[in-house]
Each structure stands twice: as C-alpha cells, then as structure tokens.
Length: 295
Image: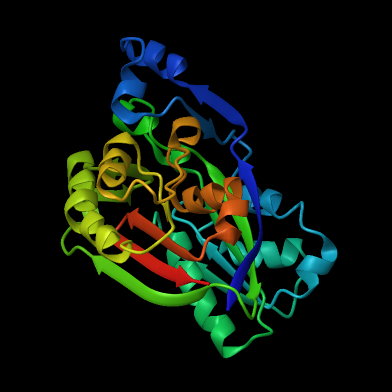
C-alpha cells in the first residue's frame, strides 16, 4: 500500500566523542559508554539549524522525484524559527507551490506519527506523494553543564519520500499511548531541555515494552527509536532472538525523531525485504506510537 522510496540524512557537522565530554566533566575514562552505550554524537555547529539541516537532507533528491510531491510533513521539537514551520521553508527552497505543508511539534514518536498520517493520506489518494522531514537540534537547548543530557542527544535531519505501491506496506495494527501528568518529565522550558531520566526509562520499560512484545509475536523485524543502552538492552532481552532488531545508538546517540529513519536507511535492503515490520517510537509526552506493517 505504501513504500518508503528513499531516505536522505543530514547530521550535525561536529563529531563529539566521549573523551571530550569526560575531560570536560572530569569523568573516568569509559564512564559514558558504560552508562549509555554511546561512543559519539553529531552536533550542529552555530550556523546549522533545524531548517538548514532539513534543507540539506533534501539536496540529494533529483528534481523529478520532487516535482510529484503533494505533501510535506515536518516534525521537530526545536525549530530555530517559531513559525512558519519547517515544511514551509522547504516548499520555498524546493520551489514547490502546489503542495500541502503540515507541521508537527513532536519528539521521539514523530516519525511514526507522521508515517501513520502519510498512510492515511495515501489510502485516500493513491497519487499522493509525501516528503516526510524529521529534524532536531537538541544540543542548542541543553545546558552545557548538564552532563546527563549532553552525552545522550545528537543533532540531525532525515528526509523520507513516501508513495503508493500496490504490494507495499499495509497497516495492520497501531498503538498510541500518552501517560498523563508526565509532560514535565522531558520538556523544553525557557529554551532549555529538562529531563527526568528515571521516569523516561520507567515509562519505556513498564508502558512501552509490554506493547512491543504483544505486537511483535509474529514479526520479522523491529525498527525502534534508539533511546540508549538501558532501554534497548531491556527490549533486546525480551524479544525473540530470531527477530531482526538493529541498533545504531552507539555511533549516533539519540537523534530524537530522526533515529528511526536513519536506522531504516542503514538497513534499507532488509526493510524492503521483510514481510512483517514493527516500527515504534517513544519519549517526549511521555508518549508512545507503534505501528505494525505487513507486506
């Protein structure tokens, strides 16, 4: 029914290693990797913004691919410009006038949310072709003395082209969860990100993991948001060993809404081959979005 035709990525241009952060905070060598499983992150420089990274992610698309776009859906928590949204900047940059611009203020569930909406749009119109943009620069909103956050998040953008395909992915099941009174457990207040780490981990393990297990009984692979070592280890321990469960947080950190599209791009052959695929995002909200596709 739908096909993710192509994904382009644009990561922050600064490569930050654990060694740099450990030196700054006078931490023991290997302390960050032991706790998070992350070795390095990609950080946006002063000139790179959510908007510029989104535009950069679209640079490798060919003009014929762009001319047929009917919708641009953008997802971000950390836009440089309050409004208009990222999709409007992209429409201008790509010279697309007859396009529907949709903008979401979403975090780690953003790609899944936008993918589900893309599915509904294409279900109603087979000629719809969607450019789905996820882009975030969390580093610009993290207090440089907050070591708990500094070594978790990366900056980057992903541009995904989605279209109708007769024998493509068919949406079989979906699950959405919003935990009430948890908005402040991961939020942006006065241009600074605050996170209650234990609460976020607890939500992932107690609320999200059971749903992943329930929906993944017969799946071939799971593409999950890359939340870090503690959460990903718990998921990996519980799912069946035969299920393909790729990970990339070690070399990229937490890319928020772009973590899943990057993971899919890195495993695109496998993604296009498998018959039953679970895609799950969880985090900001605290919320979770999980969709199950069959071919």
